[in-house]
Image (cartoon, rainbow, N blue to C red; front, side, top):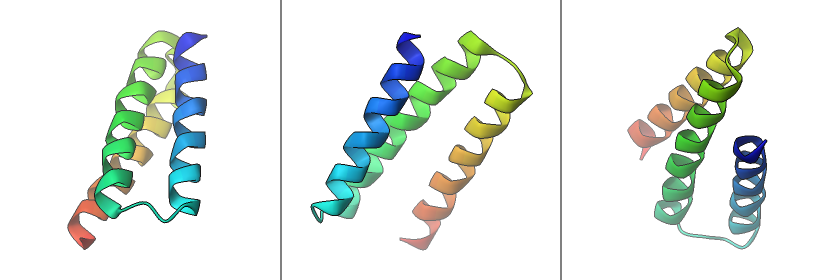
Length: 68
């Protein structure tokens, strides 16, 4: 339960930063932290859906890094 709460809180923080015009580097730092929290959640909860969600998040982060 703590892992899911951390992920949701991180997502809210990222949305607030984005709305507030945060610097890309600040958003990237938050996205990296989100990935770590999502991985912890996936390890705890298990299942294919959790692993797929983490893989998609990791792919999105990698694409973002390439585009910058």
